[in-house]
Amino acid sequence: MPPTHSHARSPSRASLDLANRLARDFDQAMAAGDIEIPPLRQSVVQLLELCNRPTFEVREVVEVVHTDAALAGHILRLANSAAFGAKQRIDSITEAVGRLGARQLQGVAAGLMLKADLFKGSVRLGTRLRHMWSHSALAGVYARDIGQLAQLEPRAAMTIGLMHDVGEPFVLRQLLDLEEATGETLPDDVLDDVVHVLHAPIGAALVRAWGLSESLAAVAEFHHDWAEAGEHSPSAMLAQVADEFAQWSANPSAEGGRLLLASPAVQKLGLDHRALGSLFLARDEVRDVARAL
Ligand SMILES: [Fe+2]
Ligand SMILES: [Fe+2]
Image 1: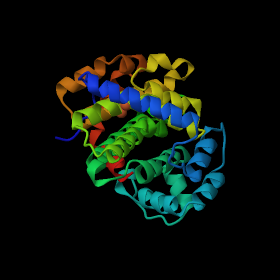
Image 2: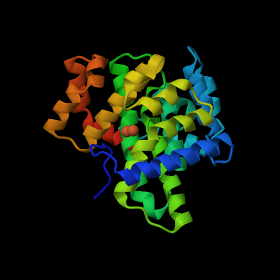
Image 3: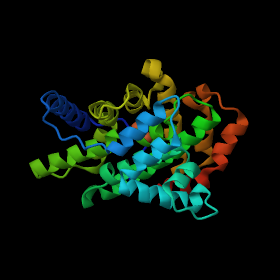
């Protein structure tokens, strides 16, 4: 059975003990500077900075894209894909930036980095990582659309959705390292539990180690509990709603739809019926875009 993202079950005692031990090891290693943090692509950092400014020029975005050949190829492919509404073929980065829009392009760049550098890995964990990535990609596209519908302030809406679970692949890799060190194979439910317990705080620590904004760190830390995010609660709420839509979308049912509508985060966001209806109806489109990322 594929791992599920939602986590209705409470973790077992054994899982909690292991999670506590890993959290302690992680904090100690971080404090000692003795932990390998996956590097962040410079193009993504620069695009995030640009898009967080009140104003920027398309030329500046194009310059950044030109520094990253993989990114340049990827956005040309996306800008020419049906999922992104391509009708006429384009061949230049400037046109691709124009078609995608700089803010969406920023999300696309973050998505490419996450998919290529973080949500990939060993044969043993490959299925889990792919599942995590497809959930994150869906949440990224939902966050983009919800951000527009709710006219939210966060400019990097898509990145907020894409990165909310950034701690998950990292925790999974820590568990794999532990298996290698001990020669012991951990049961599936223990892997799921420990990832669930640790992904939020460890995700926030990663975002901070990368030097990204406190708002993104709050997204990683509080996307299951947006009300705790203080001044960053609008971003955390957006992530939580995008997460809930992504879960519904992977496993849609009428009952799931009703639960989603009753969710405190969705209600607090204050989307009207038309906006919510359009999010439900856009499921196929959202999935096409998420798959293309
Ligand atoms: Fe999560
Ligand atoms: Fe999630």
